[in-house]
Amino acid sequence: MTVSELARSTRVPVARIKFYLRERLLPAGDLTAERRAFYDQRHAQRLRLIHTLREVAGLGVPAIRALCQQLDAPKGELSSVILQVIDALGRSESKRSALSARAQVRAREELLGWLKERGVRVRADAPALAELARALVALRASLHEELSPQAFAPYLDAMLQLAEQDFGAVRHLLSDRTSAGLAATLGTVLYEPVLLLLRRIAHEHVASRAFRPAEPARKRGRR
Image 1 (cartoon, rainbow, N blue to C red):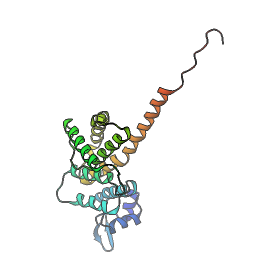
Image 2: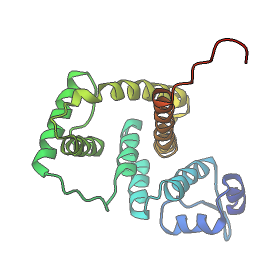
Image 3: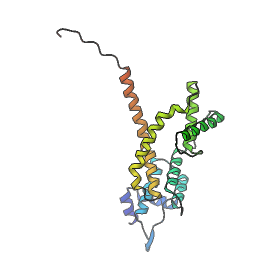
Image 4: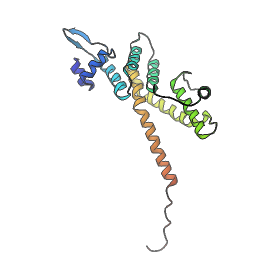
Protein backbone atom coordinates (compact mmCIF):
# COMPACT_ATOMS: atom_id res chain seq x y z
CA MET A 1 0.00 0.00 0.00
CA THR A 2 1.04 3.58 -0.57
CA VAL A 3 0.62 6.00 2.32
CA SER A 4 -2.65 7.21 0.77
CA GLU A 5 -3.96 3.66 0.53
CA LEU A 6 -2.84 3.00 4.10
CA ALA A 7 -4.76 6.08 5.22
CA ARG A 8 -7.92 4.94 3.43
CA SER A 9 -7.76 1.38 4.78
CA THR A 10 -7.22 2.50 8.39
CA ARG A 11 -9.21 5.78 8.27
CA VAL A 12 -6.23 7.61 9.74
CA PRO A 13 -5.35 10.89 7.96
CA VAL A 14 -2.13 11.00 5.97
CA ALA A 15 -0.86 13.92 8.05
CA ARG A 16 -1.34 11.88 11.21
CA ILE A 17 0.46 8.89 9.68
CA LYS A 18 3.42 11.12 8.77
CA PHE A 19 3.47 12.44 12.34
CA TYR A 20 3.63 8.87 13.68
CA LEU A 21 6.48 8.14 11.26
CA ARG A 22 8.43 11.24 12.34
CA GLU A 23 8.01 10.28 15.99
CA ARG A 24 9.30 6.78 15.23
CA LEU A 25 6.10 5.18 16.44
CA LEU A 26 5.27 3.63 13.07
CA PRO A 27 8.06 1.71 11.28
CA ALA A 28 9.22 3.15 7.98
CA GLY A 29 7.80 1.70 4.80
CA ASP A 30 9.70 -0.35 2.26
CA LEU A 31 11.49 1.93 -0.22
CA THR A 32 10.95 -0.22 -3.30
CA ALA A 33 10.50 2.77 -5.61
CA GLU A 34 12.21 6.12 -5.79
CA ARG A 35 10.61 8.72 -3.51
CA ARG A 36 7.80 6.38 -2.52
CA ALA A 37 7.41 4.03 0.43
CA PHE A 38 5.08 1.06 0.53
CA TYR A 39 3.31 -0.37 3.56
CA ASP A 40 1.69 -3.71 4.38
CA GLN A 41 -0.81 -5.15 6.84
CA ARG A 42 1.78 -5.09 9.63
CA HIS A 43 1.93 -1.30 9.29
CA ALA A 44 -1.87 -1.11 9.22
CA GLN A 45 -2.16 -3.16 12.40
CA ARG A 46 0.49 -1.10 14.19
CA LEU A 47 -1.16 2.10 12.99
CA ARG A 48 -4.53 1.07 14.43
CA LEU A 49 -2.88 0.38 17.79
CA ILE A 50 -0.96 3.68 17.83
CA HIS A 51 -4.00 5.70 16.79
CA THR A 52 -6.19 4.04 19.43
CA LEU A 53 -3.61 4.65 22.15
CA ARG A 54 -3.22 8.28 21.07
CA GLU A 55 -6.74 9.37 20.13
CA VAL A 56 -8.91 7.12 22.31
CA ALA A 57 -6.76 6.37 25.35
CA GLY A 58 -5.06 9.78 25.32
CA LEU A 59 -1.52 8.47 25.88
CA GLY A 60 1.39 10.77 25.12
CA VAL A 61 4.06 10.08 22.52
CA PRO A 62 6.73 8.94 25.06
CA ALA A 63 4.39 6.33 26.57
CA ILE A 64 3.38 5.04 23.13
CA ARG A 65 7.02 4.95 22.02
CA ALA A 66 7.91 2.83 25.05
CA LEU A 67 5.13 0.41 24.14
CA CYS A 68 6.30 0.28 20.53
CA GLN A 69 9.84 -0.50 21.66
CA GLN A 70 8.39 -3.43 23.59
CA LEU A 71 6.60 -4.57 20.44
CA ASP A 72 9.80 -4.33 18.41
CA ALA A 73 11.94 -6.20 20.94
CA PRO A 74 13.47 -9.36 19.43
CA LYS A 75 12.14 -11.50 22.25
CA GLY A 76 9.13 -11.20 24.48
CA GLU A 77 5.89 -12.92 25.37
CA LEU A 78 2.41 -11.73 24.45
CA SER A 79 1.55 -11.51 28.14
CA SER A 80 4.34 -8.98 28.76
CA VAL A 81 2.90 -6.67 26.09
CA ILE A 82 -0.59 -6.97 27.55
CA LEU A 83 0.70 -6.15 31.05
CA GLN A 84 2.62 -3.12 29.80
CA VAL A 85 -0.44 -1.80 27.94
CA ILE A 86 -2.62 -2.25 31.02
CA ASP A 87 -0.08 -0.43 33.18
CA ALA A 88 0.29 2.43 30.71
CA LEU A 89 -3.46 2.91 30.39
CA GLY A 90 -3.91 2.99 34.15
CA ARG A 91 -1.12 5.47 34.78
CA SER A 92 -1.85 9.15 35.42
CA GLU A 93 0.93 11.56 36.28
CA SER A 94 -1.60 14.09 37.60
CA LYS A 95 -2.85 11.84 40.40
CA ARG A 96 -2.08 13.07 43.87
CA SER A 97 -3.18 11.58 47.15
CA ALA A 98 -3.40 13.03 50.64
CA LEU A 99 -3.89 9.54 52.10
CA SER A 100 -1.32 8.09 54.46
CA ALA A 101 1.53 6.45 52.56
CA ARG A 102 2.00 3.95 55.40
CA ALA A 103 -1.68 3.03 55.28
CA GLN A 104 -1.45 2.51 51.52
CA VAL A 105 1.55 0.20 51.88
CA ARG A 106 -0.25 -1.83 54.53
CA ALA A 107 -3.41 -2.03 52.43
CA ARG A 108 -1.41 -3.17 49.39
CA GLU A 109 0.19 -5.95 51.42
CA GLU A 110 -3.23 -7.01 52.72
CA LEU A 111 -4.67 -7.06 49.22
CA LEU A 112 -1.70 -8.95 47.80
CA GLY A 113 -1.98 -11.62 50.50
CA TRP A 114 -5.74 -11.90 50.01
CA LEU A 115 -5.40 -12.25 46.24
CA LYS A 116 -2.72 -14.92 46.57
CA GLU A 117 -4.92 -16.86 49.00
CA ARG A 118 -7.62 -16.85 46.32
CA GLY A 119 -5.17 -18.08 43.69
CA VAL A 120 -5.12 -14.80 41.74
CA ARG A 121 -1.80 -14.15 40.00
CA VAL A 122 -0.79 -10.49 40.17
CA ARG A 123 2.54 -8.68 40.28
CA ALA A 124 3.45 -7.16 43.64
CA ASP A 125 4.37 -3.91 41.86
CA ALA A 126 1.34 -3.82 39.55
CA PRO A 127 0.00 -0.24 39.32
CA ALA A 128 -3.57 -1.56 39.51
CA LEU A 129 -2.78 -3.14 42.88
CA ALA A 130 -1.43 0.17 44.20
CA GLU A 131 -4.56 1.97 42.94
CA LEU A 132 -6.78 -0.62 44.62
CA ALA A 133 -4.86 -0.12 47.87
CA ARG A 134 -5.51 3.64 47.64
CA ALA A 135 -9.19 2.93 47.06
CA LEU A 136 -9.31 0.65 50.10
CA VAL A 137 -7.64 3.27 52.31
CA ALA A 138 -10.06 5.93 51.03
CA LEU A 139 -13.04 3.69 51.77
CA ARG A 140 -11.78 3.04 55.28
CA ALA A 141 -11.35 6.77 55.88
CA SER A 142 -14.83 7.56 54.55
CA LEU A 143 -16.66 4.73 56.30
CA HIS A 144 -14.68 5.12 59.53
CA GLU A 145 -14.24 1.36 59.81
CA GLU A 146 -11.55 -1.23 59.09
CA LEU A 147 -12.93 -2.55 55.83
CA SER A 148 -11.46 -5.94 54.88
CA PRO A 149 -10.25 -6.83 51.38
CA GLN A 150 -12.81 -9.62 51.57
CA ALA A 151 -15.44 -6.95 50.93
CA PHE A 152 -14.17 -6.88 47.34
CA ALA A 153 -14.78 -10.61 46.85
CA PRO A 154 -18.05 -10.29 44.84
CA TYR A 155 -16.40 -7.75 42.52
CA LEU A 156 -13.31 -9.92 42.08
CA ASP A 157 -15.39 -12.99 41.24
CA ALA A 158 -17.37 -11.04 38.65
CA MET A 159 -14.25 -9.51 37.10
CA LEU A 160 -12.46 -12.86 36.87
CA GLN A 161 -15.42 -14.29 35.00
CA LEU A 162 -15.49 -11.30 32.65
CA ALA A 163 -11.73 -11.46 32.07
CA GLU A 164 -12.00 -15.12 31.08
CA GLN A 165 -14.78 -14.20 28.68
CA ASP A 166 -12.83 -11.22 27.25
CA PHE A 167 -9.66 -13.16 26.55
CA GLY A 168 -11.57 -16.17 25.30
CA ALA A 169 -13.27 -13.99 22.71
CA VAL A 170 -10.01 -12.57 21.31
CA ARG A 171 -7.58 -15.41 21.95
CA HIS A 172 -7.70 -16.53 18.31
CA LEU A 173 -6.71 -12.99 17.24
CA LEU A 174 -3.55 -12.83 19.37
CA SER A 175 -1.07 -13.83 16.69
CA ASP A 176 1.73 -11.43 17.63
CA ARG A 177 2.67 -8.69 20.09
CA THR A 178 0.96 -5.91 18.14
CA SER A 179 -2.37 -7.73 18.06
CA ALA A 180 -1.99 -8.50 21.77
CA GLY A 181 -1.37 -4.82 22.50
CA LEU A 182 -4.38 -3.77 20.45
CA ALA A 183 -6.62 -6.31 22.18
CA ALA A 184 -5.49 -5.11 25.62
CA THR A 185 -6.04 -1.49 24.61
CA LEU A 186 -9.55 -2.04 23.31
CA GLY A 187 -10.48 -4.19 26.27
CA THR A 188 -9.31 -1.57 28.75
CA VAL A 189 -10.20 1.71 27.04
CA LEU A 190 -13.48 0.78 25.41
CA TYR A 191 -14.98 -1.77 27.77
CA GLU A 192 -14.06 -0.35 31.19
CA PRO A 193 -16.48 2.60 30.72
CA VAL A 194 -19.14 0.09 29.65
CA LEU A 195 -18.70 -1.82 32.91
CA LEU A 196 -18.97 1.34 34.99
CA LEU A 197 -22.00 2.64 33.12
CA LEU A 198 -23.83 -0.69 33.29
CA ARG A 199 -23.16 -0.71 37.03
CA ARG A 200 -24.75 2.75 37.33
CA ILE A 201 -27.77 1.56 35.36
CA ALA A 202 -28.02 -1.49 37.60
CA HIS A 203 -27.89 0.75 40.69
CA GLU A 204 -30.68 2.91 39.27
CA HIS A 205 -32.77 -0.18 38.57
CA VAL A 206 -32.27 -1.67 42.03
CA ALA A 207 -32.87 1.66 43.78
CA SER A 208 -36.03 2.42 41.84
CA ARG A 209 -37.37 -1.06 42.50
CA ALA A 210 -36.51 -0.95 46.20
CA PHE A 211 -37.70 2.58 46.98
CA ARG A 212 -40.53 3.26 44.56
CA PRO A 213 -43.79 4.29 46.26
CA ALA A 214 -46.22 1.49 46.93
CA GLU A 215 -49.14 1.37 44.54
CA PRO A 216 -52.45 2.39 46.16
CA ALA A 217 -54.75 -0.49 46.90
CA ARG A 218 -57.67 -0.79 44.51
CA LYS A 219 -61.09 -0.32 45.99
CA ARG A 220 -63.44 -3.22 45.76
CA GLY A 221 -66.70 -2.94 43.88
CA ARG A 222 -67.62 -1.11 40.75
CA ARG A 223 -65.41 1.67 39.42
